[in-house]
Amino acid sequence: MSLFITAGFPDPDSTVDLVLGFEKNGADIIELGMPFSDPLADGPTIQYASNVAISNGITMKKIFEMVKEIRKASEIPIILMGYINPILKYGIEKFCRDAADCGADGLILPDLPPEESAVIAELAEKNNLDIIYLVAPNSTDERMKKVDSMSSGFVYCVSVTGVTGARKGEEVAKSVDRFIGRVNKNVIKNPKLVGFGIKNHEDAAVIAKQVDGFIVGSALIDTIRNNYPNNDWMENVLSFVNELKYGKKEK
Image 1 (cartoon, helix red, strand yellow):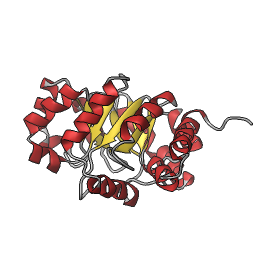
Image 2: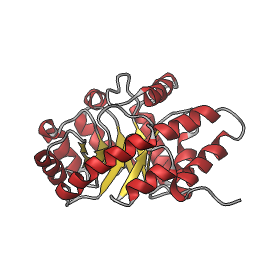
Image 3: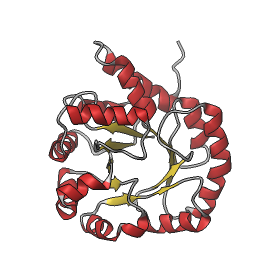
């Protein structure tokens, strides 16, 4: 189970505690979102989280500090997920070096196609950072094979064409049925994780039978948004994470 959380959402002081809590409740990988004002692959939920994080004053430097704090208590794989513009502004070489130095393990950059990634891919490899590329239902078999050959860490399989966001279970199931067969045929070098639209344990269980894991982002952000800032907000969020991984506990 890979979980996406925007760094600095719902507030800058909670990110480290959330990540450590996610790990204790079953998360295997953390995708730490680098907020950006124009997140083109993201739907309203993650756009909202990005806007909140930006208004909270989150910067690349602060994100690296968060990763350093997490590394004091955990070795959970941390993938920095975001868009190329803030990295270009920061400086690609400096970004890759600083990301590696703080303890990050890899990058997911949805608006960086493999054909245009040579510079950052070379610098990422030099700094022992995985680069995870994406495939979608409209990816050809040839493109899936190319993405598999260029990715390291895992391949991010987008279950539906469109932006991020929790979707109805039937929609996820249909997408999985049409899509996963081709993914399993063409992506053979890397583990395959499926995201976009998974909102509960039942959705995740359907997908986990056919690939190596699942990714949840929007449903997690929605859960935070619905509970914050109540006194028990973090407890409720971690309970949601536990249920995602293990299902509902019998009373």
